[in-house]
Length: 139
Image 1 (cartoon, rainbow, N blue to C red):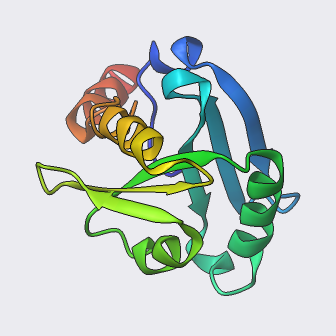
Image 2 (cartoon, rainbow, N blue to C red):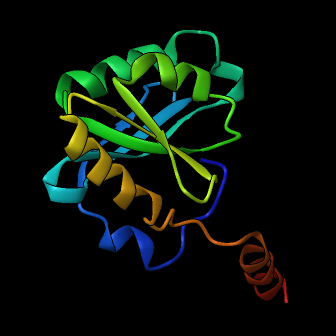
């Protein structure tokens, strides 16, 4: 994912499934989300692999295993155009920072799940925290 997770983040996740392409160039993490629904917590394809169909292949596996699914994406994320095509529903967060997407959920349930997603911790360390840890390692 080209970022570092907070130290206490991974142990607190209720992971349903981790997907990793054999090539290692695509990955996804699905967790138990709001009211037990599948939450696509992370989805990534390396820049080198984009356009090769890895995202579509990974997505098909995810949808087969989790027909009811929701996720969020930063408003300016380049993949959002693709997400809009995959989703049954979408909504923008009140803050304007996120777009939420869902598949296979009733509208009211989708909205409840997405409102929860908008306040879910992404789990990433701030860049400054990562740099400080690197400085300590090199000291």
